Amino acid sequence: MRKILLGIAITSALFTSCSSDDDNFNENPQVEAPLTYKFMRDGESTVNFNGQTTRIKMAMEFRSALKDNTKSAADLHGMFAHVEGDNDFSDADLNASGKNIRSKVAASKEYFSANTTVSNQIKGLLDTWIEDQATTVFPNWETIATAGTAGQLQQAGGGTVRYVNGKGLELDQAIAKTLIGGLMTDQMLNHYLSTSVLDEASNIQNNDAGLVEEGKSYTTMEHKWDEAYGYLYGNEDEPSVPVLGADSFLNTYLKQVDLDPDFEGTASAVYDALKLGRAAIVAKNYEVRDAQVAIIRENISKVPAVRAVYYLQAGKSKMAAEDMASAFHALSEAYGFINSLQFTREPNSSEPYFSHDEVTAFMDTLMEGQGFWEVTPETLDAMSETIAAKFGFTVAEAAN
Image 1 (cartoon, helix red, strand yellow):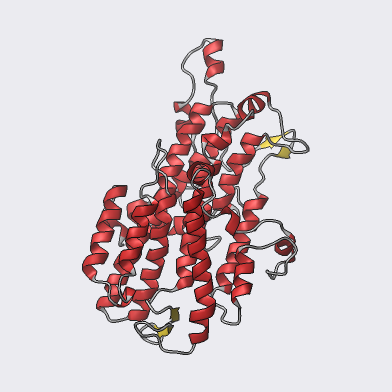
Image 2: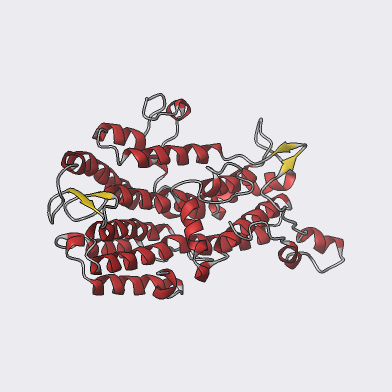
């Protein structure tokens, strides 16, 4: 991750009170972010996001299982909606956990607490894809896929074999990329970084008083912020100094966006804002904290948007080259990233960049008729332009 250890002295200074009056200074105390995401109280770390690490590890195993044709539908559903004590994973600690993936998909307080109908629709779609992977794609593992028939396609030049449903969709890719939005992004932007969670009940008063949770080293507000951090960096070897590429989800695709020169600096903007926002909580400066939330929402929301356009354009190019396996692979990734757009968050807003209905319309368009077998370059271009325009970048910038 480039520039990840840039100093933040200038940024911090922007939020330092210019008044020498003690009362004014106390209302807007100086915020100094550490060079790395490390926070201590009485010699003990106050950072904890074990639950997020657990769910990322579950999602990693689940993603691999989606490409294992020896797995049954029950096996896959068990990994997605794990019940404590069930032997769903190779990791005994994951099996012993009471956490699972499904319960946190489309489950943010600000987007779905009052919209359980849409939440259930999103979970139900994932359930259907899981079932179809096990009962339609796996039985046709050795069949050559054609329009309307699930099976395998090999990329040009003896490349990777891809396994698709009758419409050319790689269901494992659709599921994995949907989790980037429906689990990681939604929980991060619309739950743990929301004021309704950070400031819930007596969180502000307790944080102001330095009152920690019983038996813990952190205040509730500190912990909620850390849980947001965990959905991005929870699988890193050293999460306080992330290098990215540490999982197959938001962490890795933030890296991919940042590697594009047109979006260079996105990763450091997120990391710096997470550090400064956490430091602001310690300093009891909620104005600075909330300013960082806006930065994080804007930059994290770019990830599914940039990658959706990237893969739509990659799919179009591979179709022109008549490499249908590569084209369908790219379009399947785009399809999942498009589904993730409904979990983005416009800065200083309560709305995503694209609504559930708008995202559903995109997805329906891609699956019309025979799906990817029939989709046109014009459709892919029009969709790319619509997404790029909404986020303020160009198709050419994202297609690099």
